[in-house]
Image (tube, rainbow, N blue to C red; front, side, top):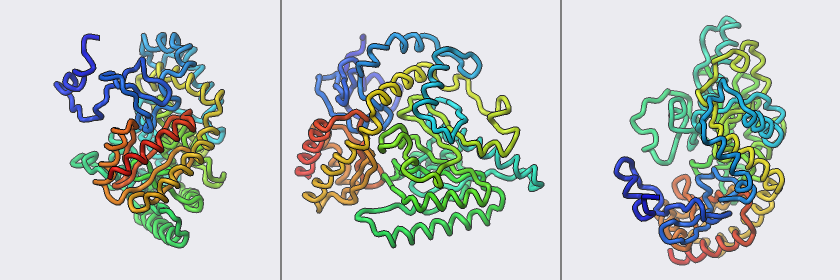
Length: 435
């Protein structure tokens, strides 16, 4: 290539803000859970997996064996909304067979996680509005209940739903005044009575928002685990109450699984850790699915002329990217053939045991250890120490991310090995010793 690795940041910075990580990825030499820096050949253990979007690591042998399929799809960007292909059909079939729950039979695909959430909202708005019009309540159904410390995107509707620890992500952008309620997150060691009290407070706020916006709440949206907000976990009992409230008030229950989906929690979808009485009406997804979109339940059919039956209500030029469709088809085959969802559950337990040792031996600095599968996190005393530790971990040779105000999160690939978990544990331990 004409641009050398050492000039990458400088070249990009001429026209864009280039304040990301200092490493320059070598796309050919990176392998498995190891990202190679093109500047000097140094290998980094990737424990953030491209912001939780890369499920099976770099240059998996099965992907390389089938790279001609990807090349064919990448040469021409087809408008999947109206021009169909065998590649698209194989993708839809594979997604339906491996990843799409049978209780969420409808699908819509688009490029971008925020756009996935926006289309989930459009499903709910259309459904609620048509119900209200049919029952003589008028054109009502334009508001969404959401939670503090949530993150649902940075575009259009989603900015009104995002409560990021970094206010720059929504500052000065126009937003809707939609009801935001407290999030009854668990902290560990768990205090059940304190969590139950926080849940009761949140439920009271939700019911008050419904009463104050009579017939105007179309959806309630929540992440099964709030990622960017701090890896905040909730009890099954809380999700069950949300399901009941949504049923009683004709509200669509949306789970935003953009970050929690596709196996990292030890289930294909994080909400599947809970019972059938917690199931959503809609899930939004992205990141590990490569292509983004929504799955929707038959509840939408309570309105005959809903968005899945009337043309042009949901659409986009590309309807998702055909190259992404081919890539996730290949990824899902690997996930299925190698049993990576179950492996994430098993290795997640192994990782949590390691982190428990880390917490016990560093009790002054490490606390609030929590996780499901490989979706794990721990806290530092404050944001300054957290940020310092992330830099020290990178110096040791691992790449990680923060979340919330003082947390470090694990987002490894689904096929990370126990040996690699051991290596990461040693790197983190050495880094903590330097705080």
